[in-house]
Length: 79
Image: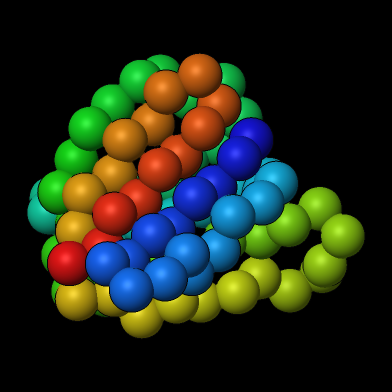
């Protein structure tokens, strides 16, 4: 699955991941490969993602944003 995290100034991350956990407005949720399509707002918190070549994941602090999950592409636009 491809994860794209984009802010107004920069591309924070773009690459292949095995999972991503996002701070949704109704609580955090995890997206895995072949997840159903969805659009959600994000709250202040941490985006956690894990790539297949690293045992430990990476966390990114966010102040909010939007996420679109469709066809194994997770697109995050940060405020």
